Image (cartoon, rainbow, N blue to C red; front, side, top):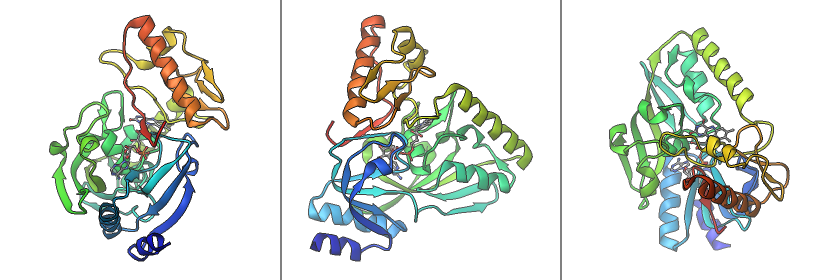
Length: 300
Ligand SMILES: Cc1cc2nc3c(=O)[nH]c(=O)nc-3n(C[C@H](O)[C@H](O)[C@H](O)COP(=O)(O)OP(=O)(O)OC[C@H]3O[C@@H](n4cnc5c(N)ncnc54)[C@H](O)[C@@H]3O)c2cc1C
């Protein structure tokens, strides 16, 4: 009880215990987090990091949960959700200053209202800014990292650092933030002047294309596997006969073979077993080891 009260007393944001993470992942899968914190500012993030370190508690971070497979047993320790309370956007010339919990869709719209483009290619990616920068999210060769001027980070001692985009080592679905565990509190993006109607038309075109090619009618985490160099994971899975494979209520999409769908009540165990099956299938057929794009949390 005193742990709860001490943690609660140190933050402006919200604290819940036993929060089901299925409510916070786009797969709608995941057991409870012991302590679930939604920070309401940089100071909250710093407090929680220091609190976890002092008490020897595990600390995990999530954004919008759109790239996460969370264990059915949930997570021990503290889970910091960068969302509500970390969603501020400011505009200065052609630059956006954005807090880490802001949704990508919101920054595209806010930039468009100011006749600023350059982020349209991210339309339809249901990410937070922090998660998208950490993952260097993107489409068809365009990645968010190309637009990052600077990030504000909180390290695992609670200290605040600024780093330039060039220092983050962006590559395909990779930034060195994935290795160092720092928390993205804010990001500065460089935009390009563009008329709002043109931006809106392009965003609509991209969203239409996504609806045509992606199975958006069921919960998923987008692409499960990274594309191997020069090839597409979806093509390999389809060619290996993986479409429609099913474990429990998890199914490899028949529309896009790199998506695994929760048909209703699928567990993390179902998805994990299916991931292993698909990997083996592609390995047996083509000798290619597919790397995971989705992040795993908790014991699977
Ligand atoms: C329908 C659908 C379509 C998708 N399409 C695409 C696509 O076209 N391209 C693409 O790249 N991805 C796509 N994705 C995957 C996903 O949206 C991206 O990987 C996104 O970057 C994840 O952001 P998030 O905020 O949801 O992060 P989460 O899933 O919550 O977390 C992902 C990782 O980032 C870490 N993290 C999150 N926030 C922070 C933070 N503030 N500081 C430090 N670490 C943090 C987490 O610990 C975790 O390791 C799609 C997903 C779905 C469901």
